[in-house]
Image 1 (spheres, rainbow, N blue to C red):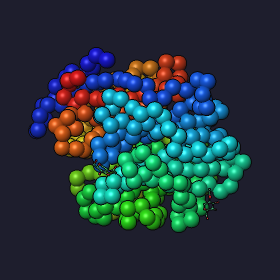
Image 2 (cartoon, rainbow, N blue to C red):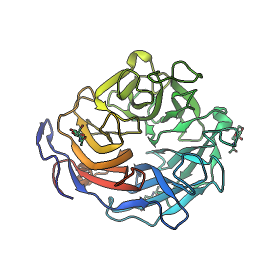
Image 3 (spheres, rainbow, N blue to C red):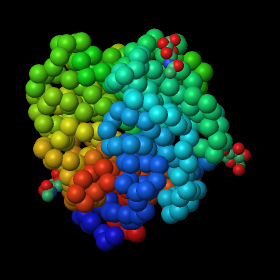
Length: 374
Ligand SMILES: *[C@@H]1O[C@H](CO)[C@@H](O)[C@H](O)[C@H]1NC(C)=O
Ligand SMILES: *[C@@H]1O[C@H](CO)[C@@H](O)[C@H](O)[C@H]1NC(C)=O
Ligand SMILES: *[C@@H]1O[C@H](CO)[C@@H](O)[C@H](O)[C@H]1NC(C)=O
């Protein structure tokens, strides 16, 4: 619980000294006698009405990426203090290669919460892979039945996120929904899909393909994988990417799009050597001109979940960091509330895979105070 990282940084608008305000509760614990063996792949979003929604995959029989799953949901109406019981909003039955999360995106003008996920992503005892969407128009209480986006996007293996999609706030393409993810292991790369009509229709956007494309990879090949987009105030979209084969470094790849994810030019690709990474999905958030980043800060192992921050849109990172969990830790993602309440400018929220022996034992929630208080 205690405060961590109390070094003060003087900022144009005040003082930032991120501290772990609250590390509770564990939102999901696997291994019980229930219907779920392992919970993995946490997603987190805030809604236009100020709720927090947490999602995960409830893997029924084992911790494997394939197999049958639920999409689990918990909701908080009080900024993470208490959470609704788990509901399963999608159930894929007993499929050999069921659903995989996923990317959640909120349309600010309609309030819709849109969740995009894959089924049969690995094409293990099934064919083809499909991109699916469900949405809630009532703050996450009720959900539509799944809609098959492959009908309009074409059939292809696409694993959205994991993390959140964005809605463009600044030109070009204000209002556009952008969801990015990755392809199959061989046909890997970062791919984005976009909607300019609040999720009614979707089309394929930019790609940053692996090399050699559609061919088996070797260690150190260029293989961009799971990714998280964010929008900067200049309207560009920055995508922070898992570097699957450790091309160039054991660190994150970052690419930038200037045209709302119509293109991801290779000239805009950089390798962020400060953001060392053990090949994992990481969290990125932009709030009030500060960029936040979470991952297990290690070149080798999924341990030491760490929060970093940047006042230069990710060009450099402050030396101070907050260790959220020293032990095994895996995928992470962040959100914040955008309301007018003074409190909403003080906190960001993190959800991540956390364990004592193994990172996939639980999914935990942490509230981070940005100015060092509780
Ligand atoms: C948000 O809250 C208002 C007021 O309670 C309500 O009318 C509206 O339907 C809510 N919106 C959503 C998306 O739940
Ligand atoms: C989704 O649509 C595609 C294209 O029509 C089809 O091939 C695929 O079987 C559908 N998937 C599901 C799960 O219905
Ligand atoms: C955890 O990560 C931080 C930030 O990279 C680093 O300073 C620290 O040494 C790491 N701790 C361990 C035990 O690896």
